[in-house]
Image (tube, rainbow over the protein chains, first blue to last red):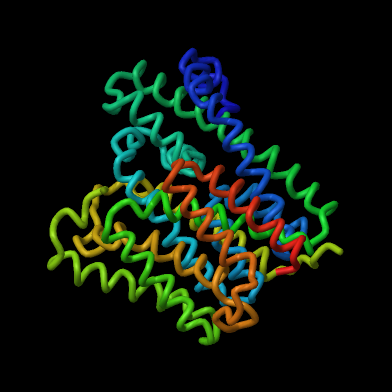
Length: 244
Length: 112
């Protein structure tokens, strides 16, 4: 969307970009590491490039690597990616009033490019959806400027990581950096006692049911953890549902 | 040394790109105003952590298809070390950096 002159010439485009710049190094380091981890976990260069350019969602990329490498069925991989991405579903409900005046293709393009940080900055900068034509144009330009920086600082290091990975021997085990990244994201999401419990149940179930074919252990882990959390939600103290 | 590309994997990657669009745009794909049933909203609270934990736990605790049977495995030190660092510094990058700082010496130096 940043290719439209009406968007990137707007002053708010630069404002959105400027606010994301301080975080660009962090995104770049993560992109670089994801690129290395994909190749070092056994994906081909073309597959890793396709992942970087098309999927454009770090956590679901990293989560699907072990499943793809072990030959899990497509529906298990897609369902796991969907669950990992469910936080975006919540964001999309919040963003709906900001988007609905646009034609569908434009909504989808903006939505696809809006990752966690851009969502957070955009909704903080504009607590209310624009009502006039000028307000809407400003918000759209801010959003596009912001995700333009995210996109660039993710893609370029991602490609560099994929290229570099071929120079590093597989025996170094750098693919484990991808697992550690997921550990960090998992810890950041597990911010209420019930969510921590959900993570523990899922982790234990995935290990216990590891011998099942077709990576069904992941499916069992998610279902069991969600059911246990549902059951406890009604019975546990309210504090368990709130961030500690 | 590069792995081979196969069409099945590329198709899965296309599918995952579709999942990105679907989830990021979920509530503004349709013009009609609609909401999820209550149970689905509740599931949104727990499914993401469950999916991540379901993928991560075996990557740290399973070796050769079975629960780890030796403590001489770099992953069982590096994984928890990374988690502890997260709760201390609240930074995913620090988690990766410290986790790898634990993992690499054990893995490359001691062969764990």
